[in-house]
Amino acid sequence: MKNKMKNGRKILFLVLVLVVGLNSTAYAANDVESGSKEVDSLVVNENSSISVEDSIQSVDGIYNVDGKARASMTGVINLSQAGGKLVGNYSTTYTKVVDRIGVKNIKLQYQGALKIWYTIITVGDKYTTNDSGYMGAFTCDGVFGRTYRMSATHYIKNDSYTETRNNITEGLTFR
View (cartoon, rainbow, N blue to C red):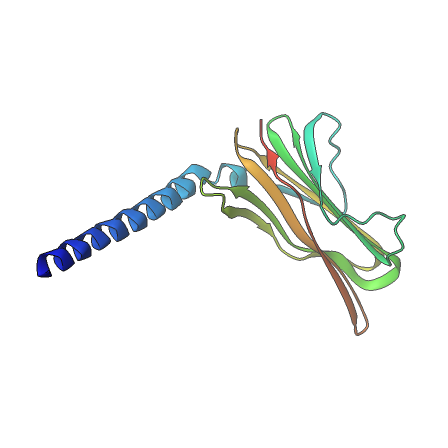
C-alpha cells in the first residue's frame, strides 16, 4: 500500500514538473520570438492618419462607431498590413468642442502559441484640447505568420463629464 502511494506521488510530481516545464518553455519561446523587432521600428503620428492605399489586408474595430451614428462620441480603430509594415489608425470625434478628446491605452498585441495575447506595443494617452476630434496612427514592422490585434479606449472630458468607449479589432494574420 505504501509503495502504491509513493509511486502515485512520484507520478504526480513528474506530471507537475512536465506541465510547469512545458508552460514555461512555451512562454519563453514567445518572449524570445518577439525579439522586439516590431518595437524597434515604431513610429507614432499624432493628429494625422496614415494612408493605407497599398494595404494587403485590414481589420476594423469590432465596436467602431462612425459619424452617422446617433451617438455623441464616435470612435474608430483600424489595423492594416501595408507591405512589410503594420499600420494602426485611431480616431475619436464628438458632436461639440470639449476640454480634452483622445485615445488612450492603445495596444498592439500578438497571439502566442497557446492562444494567449501578448502586448508588444502600448501607446499611452494621446489627446488634443479644446477640439471636437482627435486622430493618430502608428506603424511598425510585422512578423510573417503572426496574428495581431489592436485595442484602444476612446474618450472625452468636458468640465466634470467624462465619456469612454473601448474598442478592439479582430485578428489579422501577417503575410
